[in-house]
Length: 397
Image (spheres, rainbow, N blue to C red):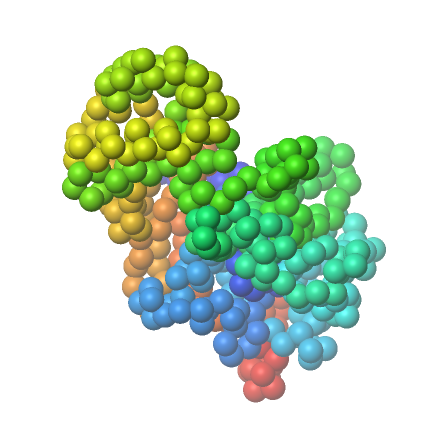
């Protein structure tokens, strides 16, 4: 029985990518069936391959971001390498790149130059601060953008700021690049026009900063840094149970507040206490409220507290570490793990893409070794064995 065709089968993506943002975008296109040809430097390839060696000798970042792709090595400073890239682009639908500022234009791979030669090609540019404007020439990486958007100033405790523990700016940019390319493919299919896509890490994360931006502009001060607590909702956050484990819950509306007072705190009169009767009042008297809640939570073990809160329909959870997340019953119960090959033949556990398309299985092909598909791709382009050997001898591939 043959497998159903995936939505992007027949679409070819050529990606001159490195690090996180662009590889995240193209991996998701590969998840949907696109052929993704990843162009890497001869020798070491994408520097993200060397971020760490924790996954059977391979980088955890690279394994996460690069399954289901083909790896082609090219030296683009050599005219022969650049010619090969242009041959690939002649048959491609999408070109994604996140090179350093100005590098694509210097190679003749800017969006305008590409579309002049190939009107149906969709170029996607991922940059730090945009390809125009006062910071167009600045290099960037995830934590710089977390700092520049103000995210770090919101993250951490009252005494200390902290970076978000995942590459949130890269992930945001990769998501917008992915959805931008999907939109451009749809528009090309329905109108015949191929629109270039541009995403910057800064503007992607700036969009995610919308709520604190409104709060600050129109409230006069930015939301306070409160650890697991919330600037505009109370009670909200973690509380320590009698067995030393943390429990997290929040109250989202007045019905839940009344239920918490009567069914968990054992103090129904607090529901009408002027200090706590409305959401704004609870935030204004957060310290007093937290004292009441913390005293109650400290009387029981975490499992009992979670059971009590669930019994009155209050959303709650224990605070997992990553190991507990990996063993989460939802992931097991919903069959979210698949095995994916990595260079060297080992298999690793990988999560199925989160958007389920009914009737279409997830594509979960291996992570490529550096240049693993170079010979096959060059042969496809018409090079014979002698040509390929000459290119290898000159370190063009």
